[in-house]
Length: 510
Image (cartoon, rainbow, N blue to C red; front, side, top):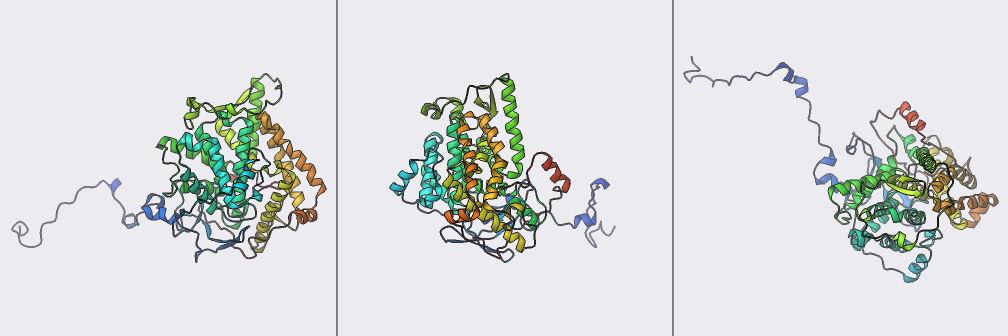
């Protein structure tokens, strides 16, 4: 009555009935809300990627001196749920802490006409040796590859955007003995030549040609100079292909950077189709998946033989003509990027291979093609790759980690590693050559290189080529990883191994 008369405290509103099933317990009600992942948040997260490499107090810095004596500092770690959140797929990935724009617009280097002419004389063959050119000359070579395929004209991508993209990739390659910008140019040029010789360029759409060259440029983007195997041993478990996932994700971060803006002409559907294709091509370079691709090549080879009734082909066809390479632009299949209507390309009169699988096979051959080059070129790359291997082994030993067998300088020789790798990779090359007969002569070079190594030992090889300096140096902190993944158990490792994954093989590149 007092309340009704207006005296005393105001009358409380009647409480609404809430079903017991919907009531929140006091403990649950006090739980802090889950923060939004950085990749969904404001521009602050994206700006954090757009910065030069800087050392961090919580992470060691990598002081790397390149072929030209230019030091680069980088701090490498892996994203986890402790600290910055993982990517949208829940996969941890290597990152570089950044505090300023990733792509700084710098002037395109002036072209040296004499060196450019020397490169163009052999750019259509595997005689091209990128180790004899400087970084500016190699940037012009990469641009010429895009121009020869017709990317600026056919896809409407301005040449200045391609130039900025090439310079961005060059600036984000660390100066290791092997995984450096020269290796990037070598693989991109090699996959260009292989696509020409196999006749696949004539059957690929413009976007597929573009994607193949982009994947060649970015397949080792920001490579830390150590293998996935070494990263696994340096810390806790994580999902496979960590390096390759980092390369592909960083590639697209550069391509969509405001200073590059390489993919502006693509609508949403074409962008995601292009992204999926390029990422799959880059992921194919993970040597732990080597057995998977050997099985794929043999599967399609068997399919071809069944379709042809077991008849042998009449020999490899000749090289494609210029008209075949420059396919008629009126053909809708060539003007439709990554069209779902053309999922297979012909590899021979008796069979066909899915276009995406063909691209992945080509990048794998190009990434391991040092043994397909002329002898003097193969020897220089052999010294570089073994230097990087031995640097990794030395660091593993210093940190008390199990030394990767192929990286132990106390038990391995440079020449022995090359012979072992040739024996390991040759069946794959032969299977690819059987699928694409126009590559048979190219693949046969591996036997010439194998015989060459019989006349060399480490002493004579180092005397001729010269051993490169210890780029990493003693005490270099290795990239470490932190992961909350519980899926990568021993059973998971055995499952991947049963699918043909190769953990270690003689002379296996990292």
